[in-house]
Length: 360
Ligand code: IPM
Ligand code: MN
Image (cartoon, rainbow, N blue to C red; front, side, top):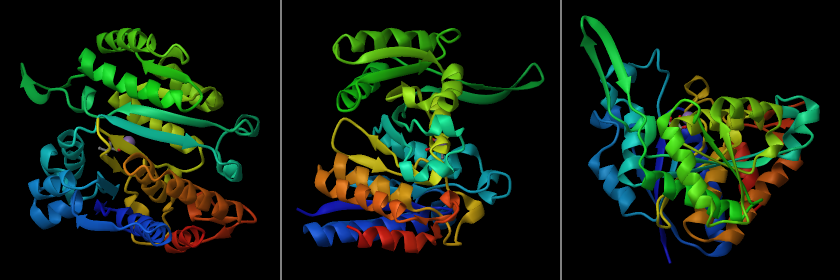
């Protein structure tokens, strides 16, 4: 049966890396006899330029009518790009947040794996990287500080801005359930990250996650504070399996977890709702400084496509084939600039995509 895939290449390096992901998907379709139907859509800065808004209703409608969304990245340089002179609700990021909310994508899965071949690219001390790591951050994606009430106003002649971190128990419960379900398929450990020594929202978070844990007696639950977790991520990342946390903490910790693997360009993500539908995008950003130069690392986008095959289409064999092709190319010594180390062969973005596609 044909699969309808909405493709949002976006801004910055988005178009280059998504082109490579599509190249790999085409190879999967050819090899395994699938029919992928792509519809290209604009979102973010390119949509502002074309339609004067970062996300049109038409784009939302096409995504809703698709089986999955494959995305690159959105946004530009926040100090120099004219997009950031616009009111906040018309900037590129507002489009992505609205899309996540309209599609109900509350669970953001960000796996972070240190590939043995990339140990040299890992910025941590060798005795730490030698242990390797394989963790998954389960980031809550449609609540918390990102979606709470916010305003900027003058109070008694003083400019004042406020953002609100709000969660209800149902929002916490559904993301906790996702985390425990995933942990059951992995190493059966969940670290719930909060700031319960200060925040009410975190104290409720801890209480609900503890309740959910009772349904998963095989899974070990531990609670950790977000500041301490940031520290542990560079001190001993191998201790983590599944980490579940609220939106903003997850945003910050997932960049850190990505970087300890060696590069932001390696890590995919899946954003899911209660159904099989999902939006798949690299964890890293649009990297405007290297956009259009064919030097970006397409692996995060390619692995995002592989997560789409696995989570939305149940094509597990095909997803394995993509992941193995990535490992093979790395084992053969091919590297993009961001993960380059001595003795390896440096290749451009499009070459990396072709090398991976050829190995499927
Ligand atoms: C991410 C990004 C987004 C976020 C931005 C672009 C709004 O940083 O997906 O991590 O903060 O969620
Ligand atoms: Mn982020």
